[in-house]
Image (tube, rainbow, N blue to C red; front, side, top):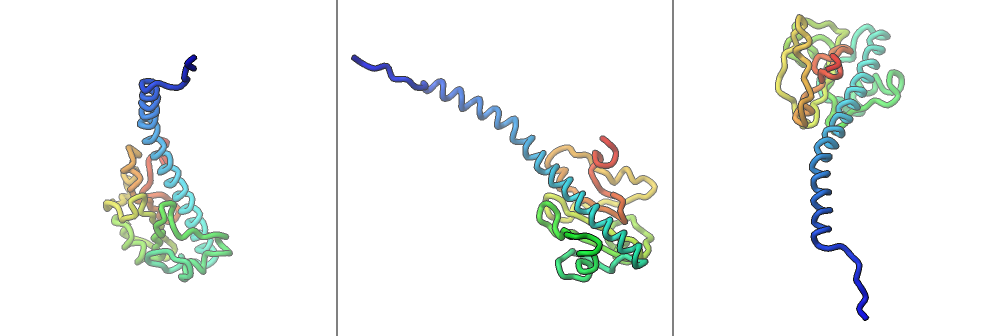
Length: 180
């Protein structure tokens, strides 16, 4: 007597693989976008923490720390802010790129096109975004600040730089500022 073998046919296996492929094609882009959005939001929170620490430093000292470029552990800005103003000072954004920080008037005016006047109690904090490169130049217009915000339209939108000037976002996603 022959025993009937149980199992799946080739057609049944192909159908299951096709269904899994379709589901993966639908879900993977959304998952990638969610991961990048989480990194962007985390970076924005880190920048806000640094901006708060810088503001507290300015309140105590009258001027922002002199700094012009990459934030690195051990430099004077890191020493000035770590411990007292911010328990753990992040040096890199969520994509692994060092934050760029500019403090006092000359550095701030050189950091962003459109800032034509600055004082020694101002600062700029920048993250280069997902592509880890200085993004396309933007000019901040204080008369029309909304033009500095960018929409999130796809993965390329996460390549945009995030820029905070003295505690206010001057280049950030529209959804973070305008509820769009």
